[in-house]
Structure formats: structure tokens, C-alpha cells
Image (cartoon, rainbow over all chains, first blue to last red; front, top):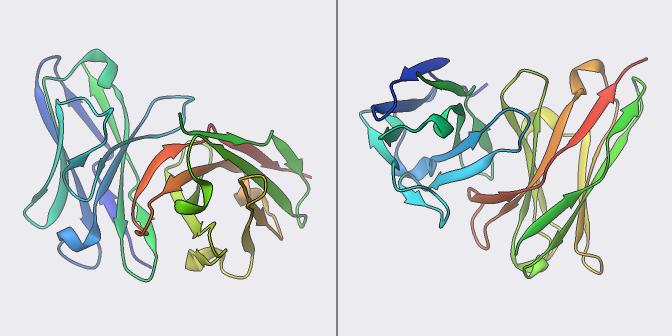
Length: 110
Length: 120
């Protein structure tokens, strides 16, 4: 069973920078996994932020960026705002149409 | 604007089936795939599968093979997700989310979710 691993929780100060990562049990995450990132606030549906490693949707704030960092996918938040406090989910593509979400990272802005 | 409107909450008994609908508007329905994702209480997101509204082809997560069926009605721009042999572990919010045109890995717009509760 393929597993995608994220940090369970992270804390960032207002105005600070934080990087969330997304690892695969199968090995290094590459662009071929088309990493995506989603933000979810309590009681709401997820909202897409990043697709295909580092591409932003039209509504994605500029302070969010996606990349590959070592053998993982990464989401970096630069200049954290109180409204960025949320759960962040990564999603990886494993071919054959199969997708797997990570367990999510709860980000606290404090 | 793109909208995905899902059907209302359901309460089912163990062993039953549930069918959730997702009505799309604001774009060309047949041109974009549709994914289904669920989230159990206090848990992360779980990808269930994808349907191509154009031809109706589907790909399901291995975990749900044999128990899930995704269909579509192009005349009403609606996709359906039916899950059978329900257990308490299927209690979750079920989301439809629009996929890409030619890609299986792209998701953008999400429905608000449908709560399915399985309880005797």
C-alpha cells in the first residue's frame, strides 16, 4: 500500500516562512508525480492551491509556492497571515490514474 | 462561474448502498473529468476515483474496486458516485472535484461535500 507522508503539524509566526513537505513511500518524489497542494479550513471543502509541482491557480495567493525539495514535494508559505491557519493536503499521482493524498499538515500561525 | 452542487446528507444502515450526485455548471461538462474524494471525521482526504464524463470511462482506487460505481448523465451535467456494502468506516464527507481536460492528476474546483452517515 502506497503511503504519502506529511508533517502532522507545524507552527509559523505571523510574517514568517514555513515549508511543508510531502514524501512518498515508493522513493523520491519527482515532477512525474505531479504534486498538488490543497488548503482546507475547518468545516469547509478543500481549496486547490498548487498543481504539477509549482503551478498556481488563478486564485492562489502569491505567498504560496510549490517546488521539489530533495526527494520530496514542498509547499512554501512566505509571509504567513493569520488566515493561512489551516490543514494542508498534498496529492501525488502514481500512474494508471491512481492518486494518493497525504495525511495532511495542520498549520498554526502563532 | 464553475459550480458543483452536491446532493444532501444521507443516513444509511450497514450493508446498504448510497448514491451521491454532483451537478456541474459554468463550464463544458464533457470536457473535464470529475474526481470523488472522501474525508472521514477528523481524518485526511482519500481519493476514490475519477470519471470521464465524455465517454463514461472510470478509474477507481484499488481500495474501492468492486464496491464503487461512478456514472454520469450528460443531459443534466450530473455525475454520480454509488458506494455499496456500507460499514461504519464509510461514514464521511464525500466531495466531487473537477479534474483536468486531458490529465488524470489535476483537480481544481470542489463541491461543498455530502455527509454520509452509516449507523444501525
